[in-house]
Length: 88
Image (cartoon, rainbow, N blue to C red; front, top):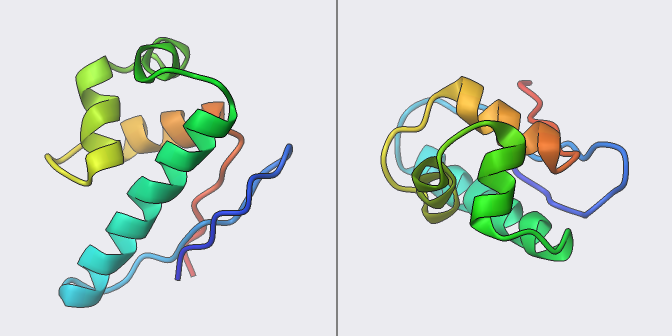
């Protein structure tokens, strides 16, 4: 499951689950965690996009759990926010 405590270093925020309904719930939690971390950092979506070197549209897609952003884009956003996605 995803957890999302804001931490200065890194936060473990997830698992990769098999495809299915559980995965959708987990990606929604990831999206909410990223959105909350961005706001706590005082960043706009455009600020985060610039820092992560992705488009603002990609940040919107990640935060709204829509589209199909690349793993590289998600990892870049997580890195900027000091978050880490752990596969277990």
